Amino acid sequence: MNVANDQPLGRELGAERQAFDALKQLAKEKKIDVAGGKIRRTSSRFCLGVEHGDYNGTELFGVGTDRFIWLAYKPNGTNTVKLYSGNFPDDGVIEFKLGDVPEPKSAAIAETWGRFPYGVDYILEREGIKLTQGINGIIYGNIPGGGMSRSASLSLNLILSLLDANKIEIEDKMKLVDLAQAVENDYIGSPCGKLDQIMILFGREGMGTYYNPAKRTIDYVQLGAGATDFRIVVLDTGTVRPGLEKSTYKIRRAECEELVSILQKSNYKISCLADIKDEKTCKKIMAEFGKKYPDLCDRLKYIFGAQKRFYKMLDAWKAGNIETVGEIFREDGLGLRDDYKISGPELEAMCDIARTVPGVLGERMLGGGDKGASGALVRAESVEELKQAVDANYPRKCPEFADKYAVHICKVVDGVKVFEGLL
Image (cartoon, rainbow, N blue to C red):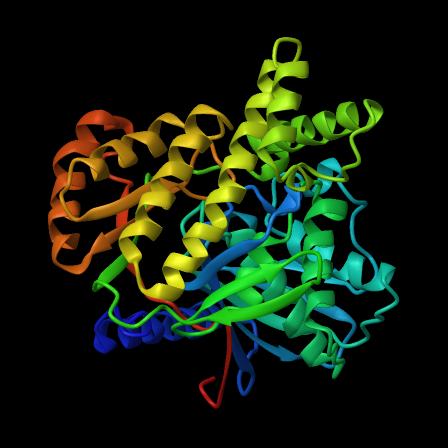
């Protein structure tokens, strides 16, 4: 696979031009002046390992993918932020004065996308980063509504754009990750980890991104030479996943934290489930707590297995053995379904279909769970057959989403890009 060029250039440029045209048209319709401003594009992400590992302390590996959020913006010379999203037209124009936003986790923000710019303003001020320059902005995106990290992409885009408008530089990129996570954790009430923000902010065209949480370091990993030509395919179920604060994700995270607390009280010297690394300790915990806490031990079973598979997957990526990467991706999916119990019927319907297609190397649900998208690693020559299988079978399996699903063939891209001179 040439991970940087797995989609025709013309198609990529067409989507970009469509986004730019949409931004200009929306600005004209809503009479929001962004003329002469910048466009910041932030990507989606595709996790290869470990999904749900970030809040459990595991190492992480993934890529930035070419479904984006675009924000056209410029400083407006006032202390007011004025934004409109083409994806949420019913919310109208979001307008507020810097430093004057609703309270965190309040009813006033629960049902509006405006909770993200409100949250960015709130968190930046809380962290001593004082904004004085407001912006006008138009937002447009094509990231599916679950599984590819739309919320993290939006949070990062807003943070970077407001900092830029205020001529504030933060050299430590991990600080930006922390800020974006805090927007969701502390303001919105979504218990997300750092996986999404890391894979987007640090995403690099054609490269895998490896994060070591113990060191808080990023390394880029090239796919080994001679790898089978393959594609990353995202299978959007057409369902819309609610925010993580309203989903099974929140329950699973709480369960993992509960098990850590139980183990700490029983004198296990751990701070997270990822600290349980050897087979003997894991078996001892299962024997000691499996009957009393079967669900909690199932969560550990997935994390322990996924962490062991992670290093095998990383070695296979470096060696160009994409078949093994796909096998592990599939194993992780079965673990997420059976042990972590975070998937959903539509997500598994897509996976079941994908498994019937020769040339699909591996498939599983993506992201927070319940709803959204599944993903697959597919031999290049089998992509069309997969699309045909989805078209033939998914509407039958999930008729209520027969006109809402989509198949996205994704390329690996830079997570953040800025365009000037286009508005």
